[in-house]
Image (tube, rainbow, N blue to C red):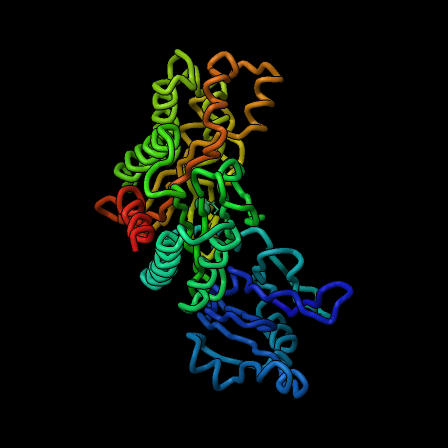
Length: 433
Ligand code: GLY
Ligand code: MN
Ligand code: MN
């Protein structure tokens, strides 16, 4: 990944290593290149040529000796040698084997016409990346450890905070001071109705008069992500029966889904389970009217309150790559299609040992989603008691999210941030002290 200047500025874009490159090299430095000769099993890292001006201003870039010591590669070469190395290799081999590249934009810039393949490498790497090895699990565990500390610190101090910005600042400060300079994604610290906005990132409103905070924030460790959400009250206890009831439904959705995780399970079935628990819970509260879970799911009514996928892979990306998405939703917060044909459902991928997935159910009361559904008189609206649903608007929403490793015996929860009763006790201790 080359260094890139910002438009109309003498500053450079914040460097973020390309994850496929990092997966193969472990190198989190700009302006490096990598070749791998499959037949010879030879991994060569190319480091930037020495640049005096850059060394004085930014500190020296990787030297060959340093790179050899730090990275598990077979050879280290200067960038200056890259083009001629490719040409020499192509002269000897390229009639017999293509050069595999991830994207057409990554063609080597050499004078000779090369035989290239830009289709096979990406799915092969996605298949490899979706199963995490022991090293990767150590990194994800460490990312989770820092996130847990940062979530806990917010809970301990929340009684002193008056604005969402302080929650954001506290979380970030704990992570950075514990060695996690980067967040795996933008911090979401939504209080009150802001919690209904799934990717709310403004994080600048006063907490006064708000009931709950939905804090979705996860540290990154050595480029590996954690993805953790906690929803907690701005008081010693749940500030209303509405807040408590919705928290308990979401808690039940999460516990039931996590307890079923094991190799061979279709993630899609967990999505249905979580949705059905939400439907039954909302029916008991009178927010949803009578109807079977199937009818309500197919109508789209449940998706107004639970509008995103139950989870996604986590790894070098917070929404990590895989050959096939585990849910039927293209993206984790994509809008679900209400139903599937049996033929489609046969092809839903199953969980495998070594995968790390989030389980992140949520129930939201979005003014805009409810108003739109009501105005459009969609088929879903026959199942919704809008008058009752609107009473929950002040709580915004509840999401609880953990990162779960699929093991041969079932699962291991990698997320250690307090939730449920433990979370409430920490808030209370903060208030009492
Ligand atoms: N934090 C993004 C997500 O939960 O998917
Ligand atoms: Mn997530
Ligand atoms: Mn999240």
